[in-house]
Image (tube, rainbow, N blue to C red; front, side, top):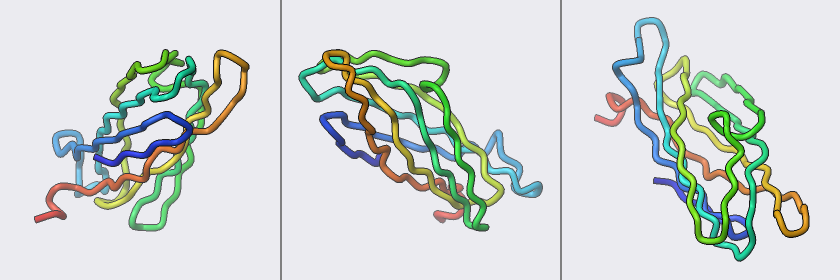
Length: 128
């Protein structure tokens, strides 16, 4: 699990290769990842937008931007946690993702970025 804390917000990511949804012969490798966001600050925050940079071992690069995560813009009161699962497909068996969330502080409307720790996407058969 990869973890990073930015501005009082802890983001942890756990990734799993999904062989049942992958087809290596057709260069399709599927990964799921679970993200846990924990508000360690003393103010209520809301996740507004996401920004992902996705790289594979062929040098391909994708950028994904959008509102919220999995259709939600969660509000986190101090001490609360939000968790979601999503997925990513690559054309190679190795890659990585990194990015950030755009958050807003409810108390004053300040917008800030929370870094998502870089995490590797590696097909399990490459680890043996």
